[in-house]
Length: 357
Picture 1 (tube, one colour):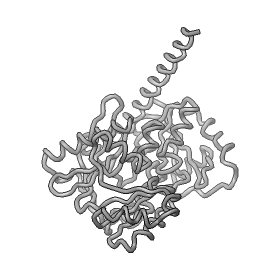
Picture 2 (picture 1 turned 180 degrees about the vertical axis):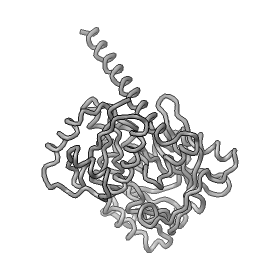
Picture 3 (picture 1 turned 135 degrees about the horizontal axis):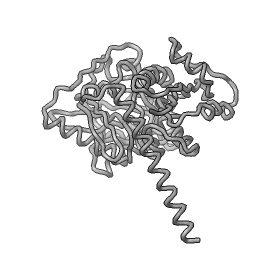
Picture 4 (picture 1 turned 90 degrees about the horizontal axis):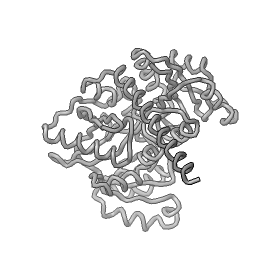
């Protein structure tokens, strides 16, 4: 068994969701027999000590308030924890986007989930779509624009979007949990939706709306990737937005989804292809949109999916025969395996350089 540090909280808009997810992960790891040290990050990015972190996990606290001190010195709480592997459950920016993974790489610390490149790529919706399309993975047609280009000539970009059939979905390129997303049925409302999305990121994409089903598949693995059964989201609101996911509890979850075996197998295969296309390792939730009888499109990959009581990722694996303790235990094992491989490759490079010398 390993000494695992569960890192949670953080600066993103998904701070509260992260705390709820971390409580589930901590419980699962302890049931699996691991020694667990919670490590919290306040809303302003400052790390908190072990005692305060444990109190957040054990209590009903919804958030870790800002400490309003310089961030860098507080990283000492991670360094002092003595953990051998980190389980990050920091959703969104400053955690899911490769930044936390880069910190772990610099510290030579094993961590659960995708590496720097895959994490950053999946978090950027525009870059992810371009990468997936290049790999032959089906994605929804879209247009994208930076804040600078949009402000330079808004009319030009709005004209480019006219080719896309309505409704349109406008999204910040970076972010999660549908924060900043708006549905547009009238082109007269498009500019306002774009400006709203630009409040959350400097790049925005505009997608054609898919009138169909929202499906999700969980993937797990390192050298060999496995896919779970498929689940379906039935939005309680007009679309599956932040309030529907976390505040109102109105969305319906159907798992397993009612699909033909042919469509289910095809979706699961595409999920594995999408994960491989971004160079994924560890785990992700692959979100799909289904148009008609079998028109499948990858909407996005979430490389640090939620682990709350209503989250689809652990539910899908539970239905596939992998209960929570076994799931998080497997993720820790994969993290340690990948870390050993990284060390081996590093040693190989050093040996090569020594031979040249």
